[in-house]
Image (cartoon, rainbow, N blue to C red; front, side, top):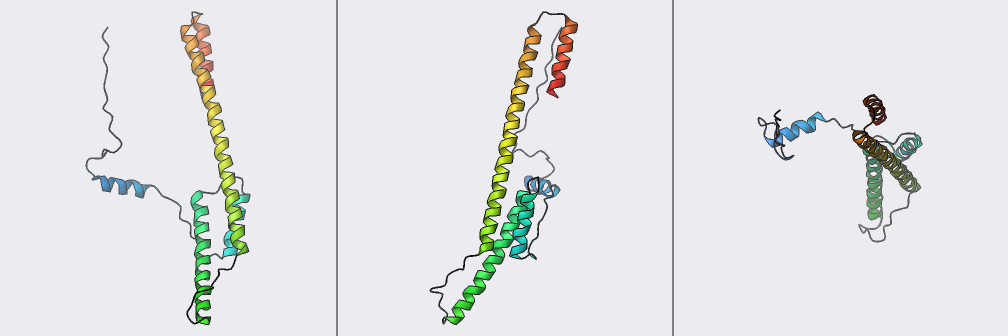
Length: 173
C-alpha cells in the first residue's frame, strides 16, 4: 500500500488573497463589510449622559465599549464648550486677561467618573470570570485527551473501548 501526501502552501497573512484587487481596495472592501454601530449623543445634556451611563451600569450585560466611550466623549465635549464660554466671559469681564481663571468643579463630572470606573470594574470582573471559565474548560479538554490516549493504548474489548470513546466524544462537545 502506498501513502500519498498532499502539501498545501499556506499564504502569509500579509499576502493579498484576492489577486484581482489591489491590497488597498481589499482592505476597503473588508472594512465596509463590517458594520459598526454609531452612537450619537450630541443632543443629550450632561445630566442625561450621566443618567444613561448609570442605567447601562444597572443592566445585567455589559454595555459596548464604543457606547460608553461615545457617552464619555459627548459629556466632555459639552463640558469643554461650557469651560470655553466661561473663560470667554471671564476674559470680557477682566479686560481680555485669562489670568486667575479657574475651572469650576462639577459634581456631574465626579458622578460620570465614578460611574465609568464602576463600568470598568464590572468589565474587568466579567473578563476574569470568562478567563476562569476558559481555564476550567481547558483542564476538562486536557483530561479528555489523556483519557483518549489511555484508550488507544488499552487492549480491552473493542466494544467497550468504542463505548468509552463515544462517551468521551460526547463530553468534548
